[in-house]
Image (cartoon, rainbow over all chains, first blue to last red; front, side):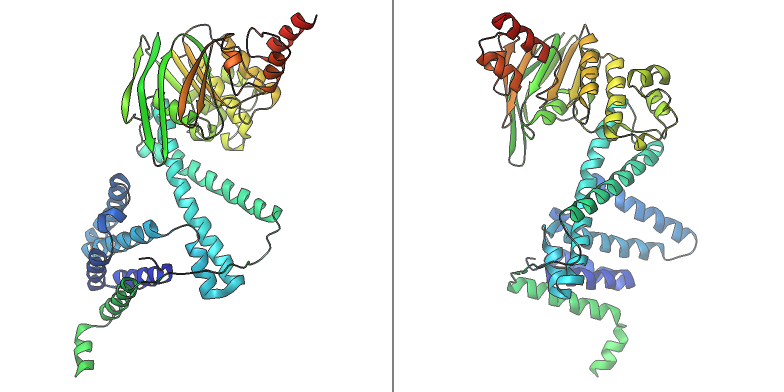
Length: 217
Length: 232
């Protein structure tokens, strides 16, 4: 999907629908199968399986305690797939462009800048993890339960330091509040079809099916 | 003891690394600008990345160690003393060598990058592996710390030491110079013969060569001695 505004709208609507009900999650998964490059938009198998494993553990605990474990698993996997697709499709500057388009040069620019920095941070974390794996291998340490704390500490400290450096850089360059850009978007018919389908599926999955038939009568 | 690179080819996106040659015993300097592929070559030589084609063959090497460019990634412990211990050393020895005596209880994240670099450099050199690879060992260090790092490297009297660096001011004595540019590794040969072919030579060496001097090695003191011999 080329237009980041419609991509963000579709992701938000379908994520809410998927989170709200199992029906919404199934609808979101069907939409994901039809309108996205599917497996090409997913992260590396190791990362994907780790994320699904974390969701599965939570679902298992929920199921064990009498909660909706299976439903939780389906709903969160649907949200994960949508998020992975949206992240893979997003290009640098798009979040800033959408935020400025929606909310203007002051608040929109601020929110867009934060979103851009957050997305850049995700890419940097991935590089950090690669480097940490190398460093641990050099020390002969296997990644496991014992190494989670030092890895997490390193990632958090590194991110805080980078955020601090970025903030100082913005101040040095005279940044105070807001900024001006002229966002341009390209929209094709497939974008409109996909986002319209997402909105319809989202609405239908939020309404009880029986009520829909009553409305139609 | 040697490492052979046989028609090495590694690609990632638009970047391609190519190289052939042999790293024998002694100190090798792989120089080149930032982004030329030095760190990628270091990972390949450390067998932490795999080449797309070609091979890296180690002969007579039983241990190998790579110092990463960014020392933060090496941290696995909450104190400097424990960090030194995680490399298998008595903390006091390491801290003395890294000029960090009395800082054993400090959180490694509270050290400056230069201090952390001194710590990890001391640990890797003290391990004394057959194959020691140092990725930008002089970055983040002040001149005094760079000179101390050079002394640590000079003290290694056996094995293969490969330094990947764009440093152009403070350098150790080396046996062989290699150049990396645009992903292509070129062997310039043994020192001192290779110095005149070295395109990324530090300014003091370039000046000495311009003056007709023939430095024996690549340190500033070598250039000064050569100039003294030439100019009296």
